[in-house]
Amino acid sequence: MLESSFVSVALILALAVGAGMIAKLLRQPIIVSYIIVGILAGPTAFDLVSNAEEIILFAKFGIAILLFLVGLKLDFHMIQSTGKVAAIGGMAQVVFTAAVGFAIALLFGFDVTTSLYIAVGLTFSSTIIIIKLLGDKRQLDRLYGRIAVGILIIQDILVVVAMVVIVTIGTPGANAIESLTQTFIGSIIFLGAVALFTRFFLVKILDWIAKSPELTLLFGVSWAIVLAAASSMIGLSMEIGAFVAGVSLASTAYRESLSARMVSLRDVMLLFFFIELGASLTFSDAISQLLPAIVLSLFVLIGKPLIIFVIMSRMGYRAETTFKTGMALAQISEFSLILIALGYSLGQVNSAVLSLVTLVGLFTITISSYFILYSDQLFARVQKLMTKFERSKDNGVNEEQAEKSYDAIVVGAGRFGSEVISGLISNQSRVLVVEMDPEALSKAAALGAETLFGDAGDPDFAKLLPIHQTSTIICTAPDRRSNTLLLEAMRSLGYEGELYLTALDNATAELFEQSPKVTTIRPLKMAANKIVKGLKKDTEWKI
Image (tube, rainbow, N blue to C red; front, top):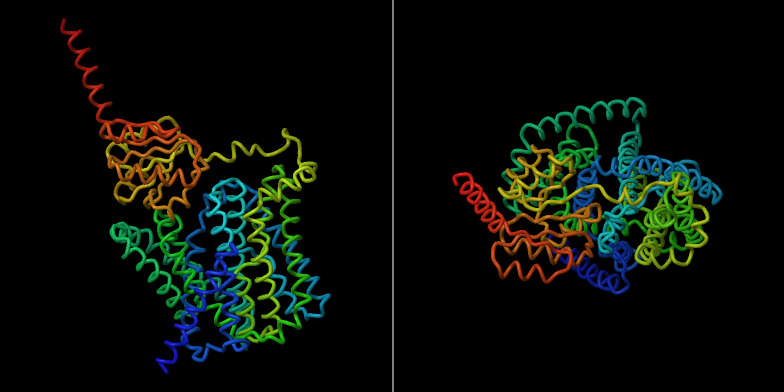
């Protein structure tokens, strides 16, 4: 049995690599190939899922890590930085999309429970797709990217609530009100206990662990799985524990570093969820649901962006921002498939509905990926029409001001960096500090700066930095490697602001001065000049 499972997983992974290569050629996100591999590995095609227990276990790991990363992204600063548009836009889009989706499902003859599942599945957009593609475009921290991510945060909170409600009231023989009350109280107690442990113990442990990248990754995975298991053992759902694990670390400086390290593992483990999903699909169900899948997909691809456009236009945002935000959200989420699979496992929806939502996911994710990649070209075609619906500049949002969130991002918080940070904060500047030393980060936070743990020279981590939210980036690290890596990373990301780099020798300074918009900092020369000036003043006083 073990050999059979090993061979099956090996074949599935080989199939995933092949499908992933095709997806890359077509400029599609890897999740599209996962859905296709899940269908191919199921009974409809190659029937590779002969030992379901192992696949289900891996699938649960994938969902736990996904929920952990969702909780980790629950950054309330992000919601605050995008203002009320994230909350109002997110909630309104969910309500309107669910209402229209419910009506369409009823028109196709689905019962009320099934229509509710379909409607809820249509409301959510894919965090994985949006963050991946906007990150690749270097526009994740643009205003429309931040609004889209803010709306995703609202959606992710709602989807976790929906999953918990489904698990709680979907259990046979359960009293809905009593079960929900117990789950709510238990979740609050569980979250409070984890929050206390995090505040008084976990952050100190993480300060020490963070010095080892390998141990940090192992810790993140363990924390997610252990809390998911603990939550399940005390009568709550696994989903609550994994989500709380992420939330407990969302306010720490390590959130982006953990996220950057765990995202690839999440993607691999999610493959097995789609394999499990594919095992439940049949070709006959897919054919029978083709027409409603096309209609619902058109609504998601056209209707959802229109809803976002109307809401944001009424709030005073420019046409380009509303258009690109809507295009980014024009797909259903991986959570939509998880929700429907959950309903299927509880016997509340049948395999035909599972096939329907999977087809909608495949259609919308594939097409919306091109919407995001070519949003500039698409907007150029509709710009004249859409600008007619803009509000006047006097009544609109000042987007140029909204684009800027930090006065400076300072990389390095050592002796020299601390002086720079202190000086900026004393001038009432808003500063984000990026550093690999937990102790230095703590000192920077004590000065009043926001902090992130990570290496700004790492391309994967650099993509997560809000570089378009500032016009100034300062590297105070004394070593040449950190400064040159940061310079290369900012070039690749298309950063257009001022970049200050530190050089201790003439050769490094000459290298940096060859780049436009780079100002070289010479701390040794600055210190020497200060001493010389002091000596001159002292000599003049004596004379």
